[in-house]
Length: 137
Length: 137
DNA sequence: ATACAAATTAGAGCCGACTCGAAGTCAAGG
DNA sequence: CCTTGACTTCGAGTCGGCTCTAATTTGTAT
Image 1 (cartoon, rainbow over the protein chains, first blue to last red):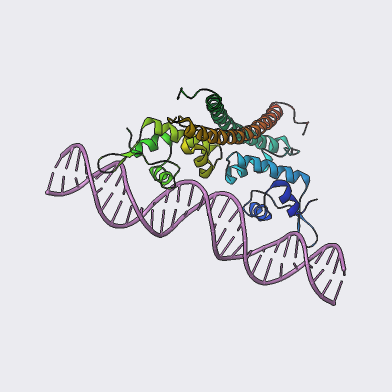
Image 2 (cartoon, each protein chain N blue to C red):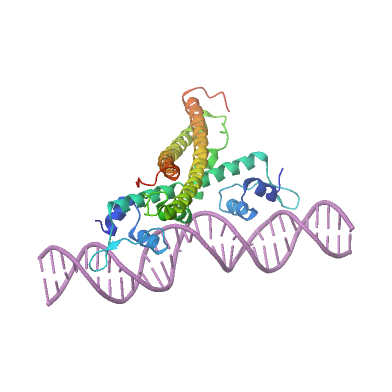
């Protein structure tokens, strides 16, 4: 079990930010020690790291909250005893996950395009810098 | 030549935003008609669309400004007459572009990872929803 | 016992990125 | 000529996402 500052070190998020995420519902409150200090599990840490990756990919906290709510994206599914309760949850999660996947794949396309453009341009620059100056593009 | 509202339609950015980008130096001011109205070229529009893609990938306006300054990313290089003036510019651009490429490739890795995780999970969900209920994961 | 480091809360403040309102200018159509 | 609509500038307001301060409490070391 880890303190908030240990989690801070591992995730790169400040304790301020971790408490803030909890306050606005992006993270659920972890368990507490005697005296009230937050204490995190390893699995909570990897959840936070995953969340952080999504943020770097440009998703808003609101989007992240939607995609990770009920453990859609990052947690194992909890199967209830009764299939009647279970199936609607499963369907809803499948739907949310599909939407999420489309989002990511759109980003992937844009990103791949930007990367190949950049590589092309870089190749031209490198060619120019070691070669002749008489061929402006 | 296009008006600001035509550019707005094509890029999905509001006229407010376009003027704001100009104010803070993300976009350079376009030429003006008689009377002072902004008028944009097609090439300016594609520049703006590209900028917009970078934003969707999670880059800040400051990063975008750095990467696109002097036309590093999106514009053709302007070659001066004198190689002595030209080479340092070229080297600086090559450096900025390389940094930019690393950024994008890091994002690409994260993104690919998130996508394969998501696909795996979705496959499990789909399997569950059409199959037996007795194997909770 | 006491001092120190690290945690807690509530609430205020800050910054980036828009977003809008007000007041004014200009070109074209009835 | 005068209205209409799209443009202009400037400054203020909003919102998301932190970031910090202040006052307090707790656990550990001397």
